[in-house]
Amino acid sequence: MPRFNHLGVQPSVPFEYLPASTREMSYYDLARLRGRDFYEVHAEESHGGNAGTAIIDGKRWMAAAINGVASKESGRFAAFGNFQHLDPELVGNDAFQEVSVHLGTRFYYDEKGPHYEKRILDLIAYETDEFSPHARDAMLGAVLLYNEQQYLHSLID
Image (tube, rainbow, N blue to C red; front, side, top):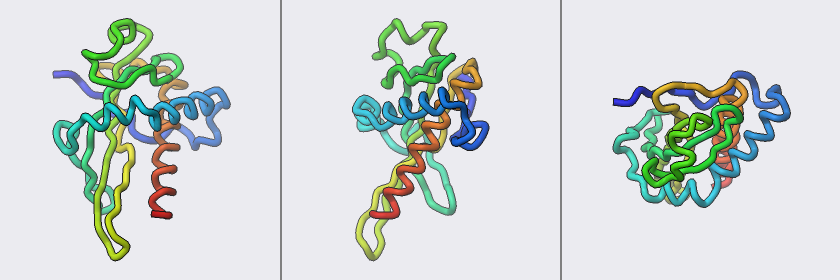
């Protein structure tokens, strides 16, 4: 049974206080989290299964786990997909670590009609957490930005 290290959803300091190079990597990773390969993998995953559910502010979120690999040094998300389908040059490479992005979805209906929300509930490192502090903050900065954008979208929905 693999050991999981919950990295969370917040960098070590407020985003604006991160070094410029870390913020730059966060924006790169944000583009990867919003990219086609991430959503293609997400579309194939079941919700609420192995990744479970979460209650946040009294609201139930169903999670799907999107696996991938990220650079231990920079935090750059290199690829997303089931590990057996990823490039063998990445999986098992000492410079990269396997991660899982737990993406939560919530469907609800109110007087305005049906709604759909998304947010990243957790970022998980498999087995050991060997990410540098820069890498961890870059990935968690991207998670923070992703969730902030999703929240803003929910306000205009």
